[in-house]
Image (tube, rainbow, N blue to C red):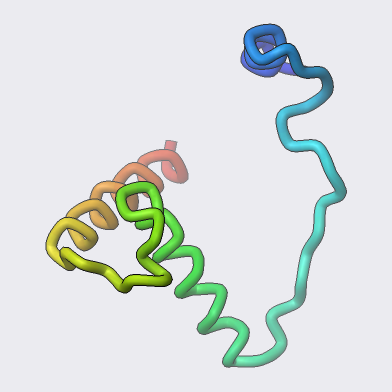
Length: 81
């Protein structure tokens, strides 16, 4: 258990690891499934700025594109160290 996990658990009166549960993996054996997963991963952060985008559509595409660009840059920095 990391120091952050202990801090988080104490603050929110929790126990255990932050990501409890069984790890699940799926083999992407169909092109349709790969396209779905790719879209899900890249559009999922947009719900942080517009929680109902799936029901109502993306109202302001410029804000969504800029937000996605920022998230992509941050993810790239995290991956590359």
